[in-house]
Length: 315
Length: 280
Image (cartoon, rainbow over all chains, first blue to last red; front, side, top):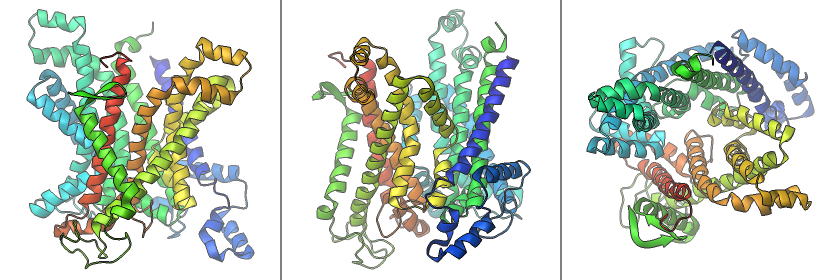
C-alpha cells in the first residue's frame, strides 16, 4: 500500500510540475509576444525593445520559466503589470476569501449529499427518491448564475431575508462573514450536490444487489443498518472520487458565483486580470487553481486506496 | 415512458427525448430565422429602457431600449452557432488525433495521450483564462482555444473506440492492402464508431454551449454590441434588485436548451446500451 501511495504522490507532483509548464507555455504561444500585445498601437521598434527589456522577454523562455516557477515555490509570484505591486500581496486576502467560501460550501454540501444519497437508496422508488432525483437532475443542467440569480431574486429581493451582495472586507467579523456569504454558499451547494448525491445513491444501490447484502437481510437486520453498516463502506471508494471531482468543480464554480455575488475572491481577481492582460496575476491565479485541483484529485485517489481493504494489504 | 407508435431511426421515442427534440427544433428555428422572425434588429433602440412587456414588445425592452425578444433570437444565433462551430472543430481535431493515436500506437500514442492527460489535469476554464489573457477575446481566438481544449475529451473517447475497432480483421485487411492513414480513419474506423460519437457530440455541444455562455457572462466571451445569451445575463443583472425579469430570459434559455440536449443524449445513450434489437 505504501508503494501505491508513494507512486500516486509522485505522479501528483509530476502533474503539478507539468501544469506549471503548461500555464507558463500558455502565455507564450501567441504569434507576437506579450510586449506587442500590451503596446498594441504604440508598438514602435524602440518602445517594443524597452518593453521587452522591462518584462525580461529578451531572455530565453526556459530561463524565464525557471525563474518564475522557482519564485512561485518561494511565494514570490512576480509583479502585477497593472498595479506594479507584488502579486502575492493582492493574492493573499483573495485566496483566504475563496478558501473560506469553498470550505464553507463543502462542509455543508458533502455531508448533505451523502445523507440524501443514502436516504434515496434506502427509500428507493419512493416519492422522496423520485423528487430528489428530479430536482438534482435539473440543477445539473442549469448554469450557476441562473441558480444564483433565482436565489437572489426570491430570497433577498422578495423576502428580504439575506443581503444580495457578499461585499466582505478584511475587517468583516467572522460571524458577519458567515451571514454575508450564506447565499453564495447556498448556490454552490445546490450546484455541486447533485452529482455527489446521485453517485452515492447509485454506488450504494449497486452494492445492495450483491449476495452478502441478501445474506444480511436474511439474518433479519433492519434495512437502514444494512445500508449504513454493510453497503456504504464498500460504496465509499466511488463516493470519495466523485466527492473530490465535485470539490474540484467547486473551485471552478466559485469563479462564476463570485462574479454573481460580487465576492472579492480569487476568481474575480483572475477574471479582472484576464481582461486587463495582466499576465503575471493570471499565471499566479491559474497556478493556484490548478494546484488545488490536482492536489484534491491526488488526495481522493489516496483516500480511495485507504478505503479499499484489498489495496491496503499487499498481495 | 415511450410514446406509442412514434419511432425515430427505427427506435421508440421516449417522452423526454421528444421534448428535447422539440426544444432543439424551436431553438434552431429561432437561431436560423432570427433576421426574419425577430420584430426588430438586435442593435436598434426602439423603446425606452426597461419598458414593460406590451403587444409590440412581447418581452419588454432592455437597458438601452432594445427589443428583448429580438435580442434573444439574435443571441440564439450567436450562442448556438458558435457552440456548433467549436464542437465541430473540436470533433475534427479530437477524432483525427484519437484515431491516429490508436492506429499508429507506439510513441505517437504515448506523446498524444500524455499531452491530453496533462491538459485534463486542470480545469479547462482556468487554462482558457491563461490563454485568453494574452490572445484577447476575439471570436476566432475563442473558437480555436475552446475547440482545442474540448478536443482533449473527444480524443479520449475516439482513441478508446478506435482501439477496439483497429483490432478487427477488416481493418487489418485494409492495412495489408496498403491503405494509408486517412483511408483507414475515414473509411474503416469512423463508420464503425459513428453511433457513440453522435451521442458524445450532443454532450460536448452542451458543454461548449455552457462554457461560451459562462465566458460571456464573465465578460471574456462575445463582446458588445453582438447579442449573446451569456453577455445578456451580464448586461441585465443589475436589475434583479428592482424586480425586473429581463436577466431570467437569456439565463432560462441557456438552461432549457441544455436540458433539452441532455434529454436527447440520454435517449441516444440508452439506445446504444441496448444494442440494435427491435424493441430498443
